[in-house]
Figure (cartoon, rainbow, N blue to C red):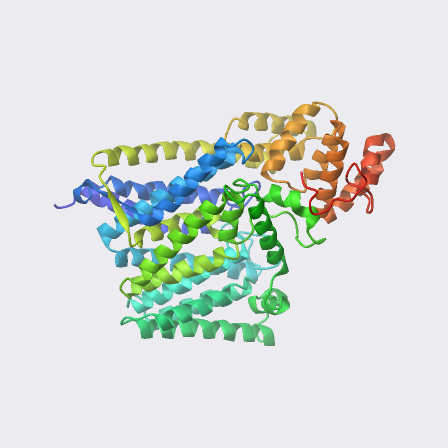
Length: 592
């Protein structure tokens, strides 16, 4: 049947959203507290909703294929529901956000499977690879602007000193995106869609910026692409092998130029090779993260410690760690399998491993064509990154990854939904659009509040405006944890409204035990009469944030003359003083 102009327009709209999804969100330069990636993830969700309307198009036999890999988000959703039924396992608001992300990932997997049926895997790979390469080149341009000191441009993110961040705002995420661009460029070359001069020029743009990002993982990416190309069969093997060898050679040559001083980077000690040499190939911080995460999992093996509870769990364990072994309390253990085990338990870990391995095995058994190599290469880069960081916790990584996982799934079960498909997808798109609109408006108010942008003549007026804004936002479930954290950060530590403040502290600490609130909340516990609990909380806070502890001690010493309770706590916080009621210092088993 000939497509009508409306269908052709819709097709172009959906494919345009799909092309923008892997590239545009990470290029947005807006990064402000309390959620630096909010606008990037919001735009990824909006583009996903547009792309999902593809499922409204007439399909073969009115059928939707459910890819086997989609059982992963569905299974994790069941575990999240189970945690929600257990009192105190996790914050309901965090579980709600987790559930929405899982539904998002599952729908993108369904969409990927449908796109493979409608377009073919090769055409879909062409579209996504071109988008990734274009996005990576724009990231490299932003990185170049940062490296050369001309980053004061409205479309370039200006971040903290030391290391390139691109517009994605994080060096390791930048390196991942750049090497996804490298893999995509090699794929397009092997498909004959790029000539060698253009592909080589792209590599020369991407690889130096990846080196200057300081991410040590680029050596894993470069080696993995070469090994994958070497073992890959098919007619394009030679082209892929030559391209991967060229990428590795350029990486080695670029690092050599940096080491010898022939190229002068902004910070010579922050290049990928320099950081790898300085660390001796190891990472003691990740060692502490992983060993502590394993201990937390062993204490909560079945359903985990609760989604989003990593920071609180590390606060509870901080006295068992070597002094200054961590730069603070982590939100993530920087390893996907361990993170799943820690927060969601053994069943979730088994789902991840079994379904992931089955997906990889099925892909390996497929025809060794160029599209298969691109899927394997991009999956390998994201998997390696996920073993060292947490890219899939960002929507602009998760959505494209879920799309490709569903598209490349070798197993699927047909769902005979018939005419219900338009109703279901239509409901998802309408409700999702309404949610995104409200969320964007509410978050804009929260961001202005956190960053002191609310209007007001004088500190008192601005403080009242902030209190009014936070009161209004308290009913927004998805933002409530950030509202509690902001409220706890802004409130004083006086005895006024003590029980309200203690309740706010309890919720905020369960979300994020930040350096701005841990000492304050410990003092409020002491005001409430729990001296032993306050002392233990102070010990943990000082162990987690030793530099902040020095500032707090100086401030409390100044205020202790008129506050005997503060003076008592200050004495207990001093080294060598007891933290428990029996006069002993807390040991490995002293946890509450």
